[in-house]
Image (cartoon, rainbow, N blue to C red; front, side):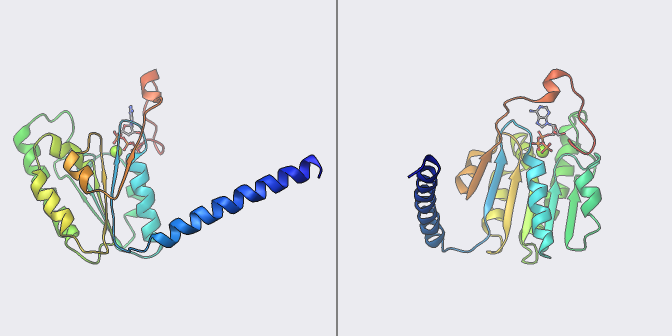
Length: 202
Ligand code: ATP
Ligand code: MG
């Protein structure tokens, strides 16, 4: 056998092994239901990943809800592009919560108001996917109560998937999640003085 043939034979054996491993795992995944996904960690990509999944679900004509707990009044390219889709409902924090408001009472009220939209979507079977973008901070600041959020998520329609984004996700939410992805910051342009870029960062 030539070197190339030996290499091909090795490759084929490895692929057969991989295929049987993947087939086994596919066969053993039999449960079908909506999932709870948490996208957390310090690295970039949490919100973009959530919107990627929104696009994916809309692509099949599913009903989607997005609740933006922080960046409501900020520019946001994905929202601008997708908001015309009749299958997408978007709720944003009314008073435009930012790090600068620093008024607990107005922020708490704004949060409570947008939570009503979230609670409605979390009980609406026509929402195949609901994104709770940056909700982790609302829990951290104590604007939302973890029990209320847990209840709403655990009583959601069985076919509904929920995506939670934000740093420092609450451990009780993590305990409920089906999938958790921690975005690991290896490097971020911002730390080298690069400005957030339109169409890339927002
Ligand atoms: P993105 O929206 O780009 O997916 P993200 O949701 O993972 O980011 P956030 O903390 O919500 O992260 O980001 C808010 C803004 O800060 C975004 O414009 C994002 O590009 C930027 N950003 C994300 N990670 C970092 C970081 N480690 N340092 C500085 N800026 C960041
Ligand atoms: Mg984000």
